[in-house]
Length: 397
Image (cartoon, rainbow, N blue to C red):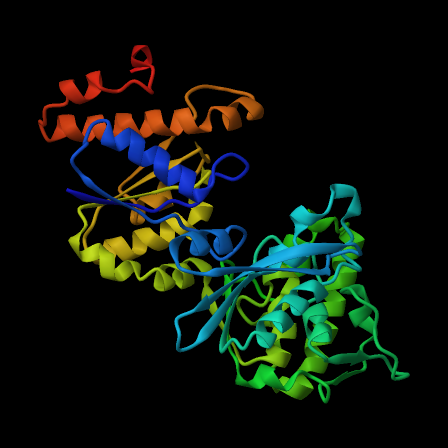
């Protein structure tokens, strides 16, 4: 029997690689002779660079760039060179992420994506032909204005002065000058990976939906929504499309809008991008079972998360899918449309610190119990395998 183990990370406790290893450990206690293929996943946001660097022969690049508020940060991205072409994989969270600042430093009115633009420039300097930009975890609400500014685009007010950084300043935008934009932008294939379909503005837009988690008050949300809408109106003079309601343009504080002024962008679901890079479709035909999971699973997992992405691919080839989560939300019924069985791994009501500290043991135990249930269902001998388990407390089985 061949099993693919393809989970996302359990945030704040286990990396995707660690999750895959725990599941393999639990399953191999019951099915030691199975062939296990571990494919740690990410959905285009935080952790994507690490996952693909581990899976592929990539080079880690690190550069000091401007952070989302003021202080410089060391942003890491991945360079892949197959001898014929070079591809850069960059996460907006690495230079402009919410995790780079403390809650008291959150400043959605003035936070900038400029540092992400600096990482893109570094990739261009290294001669890449393709850039993959993962959106997710940003601290910014500037519609990618900072990225555009880093690449040489000038955002000017009515007096011809350059606008300061941040989304709030876009309310004063009068003209976009791309005459000094880096000329290499027009020759690069640019894929934007995101897992949301929110538009740029409105009640489901970048500011209203994601602004509060970045520190925006209701008054700030209204101001930023207006500013981003104004940016889209002015940008239409260049792109000939008003992107206020374009699907996906609300990701990462509206970053696709600024990017669309510099590049001919393609927006793609992050998990699909990762699965394509890893050539998962070529592995599935010979597989008997797929196991996936993530830290928290509920019906929101259907919105482009890793377990849903791999489950859709498996479903097309008639392969059953089991998912293991750190915890399950109240509503999971819609997940059964593509995932056959779903399990939570937390063994009892626990404090958050205890959940994190026991995540590895709980996940291994859950995987082992699922495997044992499968073995019983298939009337396979399991006694000897159970006796060999020494990592799991047999008294709890």
